[in-house]
Picture (tube, rainbow, N blue to C red):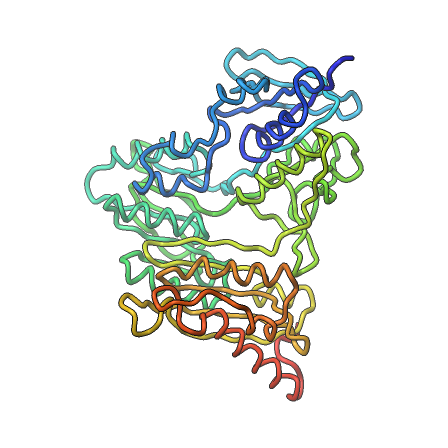
Length: 468
């Protein structure tokens, strides 16, 4: 019998997890695996780049989970610096370009995995490609930024464009390198993944750390000097001096190949798959990672979330299904954590505007507490905001900003959201307690108690709050 051929486009989390899992289930005599990666690295943590740049991680090798050599030792034909430029769905083949030699060739497949990831948002503005302007999507990007930082003399001023996860993490990294840091944010407050009232807490904390945050700032151009290198970032009404510019504007699904051949895409531009991660309408094509849209279990709609946690799960599920096993990915609740210096930021579920967008009525409850018993040394404040559905009390979302172990408390809420719990049910959760770890009433449960009261009061009031 001739072995089936699996072709994988993309050599990072989803793609190589799929390839590795499929290989564990089927040997090379049953399934040959060819994987294409256009970059220089495989199976690495892009999420760790800000911490490498900031000096918390020793070097790029620490971020690599498995090298090309290690993948090849597992009988995976991994072709580095090779970009897939075309998919022929009907002919079941892909066209690849060797970026080193310039050679182009076709490779057939019985099964195809698309794991092309996401591309950074890089607006087409004057000066955006000037020396000194850096993205932080790949390990090569991280190395280029570090070299740029080392070459920067004089006043050492950094401007970070964007105040999402990457933006605030890179602001911290620039601060650690001794730069004066300005963050330009076009939103109302930093961290648009939070409601503005919680984002304001992040803004205040960043100011306290010496990071200047400018909200409602729309970048119009990167200004350069006579040597062509960046000198300032211009907005509609101001100019901010810069020796280095870091882009943290976000990412979007890289689905150029998929779009070209008419594969189904969702409202956010990501590939649409079924629960098995199979591309809708195509029995022999799977997709996973940052190039797909996933079901939001709370909102009931698809969304695009670029996170390594999801990508690795997608890859495991795809590899199981390709290799003759079985697996499904039911969806997400939108959990994410980050930090800037010692400030921890977390969210899961829906923000207020998300709930309104899907027609949900809700109440909110915000509390301030501490991560340990108030009398225990080192207790630090945290703020927890909770959204609950009007009348039913179903938990809809939680946001946490604080210190001293604040962020990972969001996992309590993530489990409650996945289980469809009400805030009243949450108040009875049997959480761990000891003074060094938590007050008698954990802050998440304090917020749940307050949300229960808000639900009851709203049920007796005229006109429910949170009206869409």
